[in-house]
Structure formats: C-alpha cells, structure tokens
Length: 100
Picture (cartoon, rainbow, N blue to C red):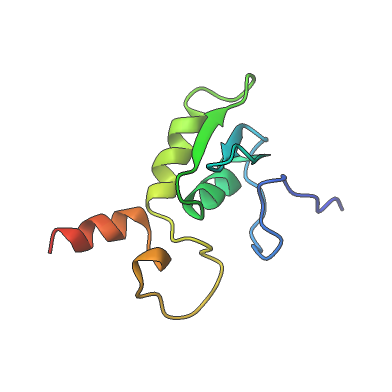
C-alpha cells in the first residue's frame, strides 16, 4: 500500500490526503509547497501571512475552499494540549475574542 502524502503534509500531522494535489501554499518569503486541499488548509493555518493559489489543473474553487477552511483551523492543529494564546488559536477564534 502506498502511504505517500502531498508535500504540504507536515511530517507530524497524522491525517491522510483528501483529493489530488490542487494548491500551492506560500509563506512570506515565497517558499511553498503544493498540496491537497486538506493539507493546504492545515499548512496555511499554520503560517502567518501565508497565501494560497490554485494549480492550473485544480478543481474550480480549490484555493478559496482552502482559504476559508484555514480560517477555522488552529495552527499546528495536530499538537495536543491547551490552547490559550492568540498564536495558538485559529484566525476565526481570534476575531471572535476581539469582539467580546
């Protein structure tokens, strides 16, 4: 059985890929990785100032789905333990806290 995963999958993230490699996620220095939508979103959520772009043969809407999913995912979400600092929360959680 082939257990290879997309380049965007963090080595410590135990989740499998979902779908084909469809997006490129770039950090603020333009270093990046191609990935499935699932791992692309998890990677984007773990980057400050990251960007996502659909690959030429990606399904329609792939980049926006990744962008929207990343908003609700905590950085390095596979790490267990208490999460209380803003850098440990999702962007959506931080927005909600700002409106309290």
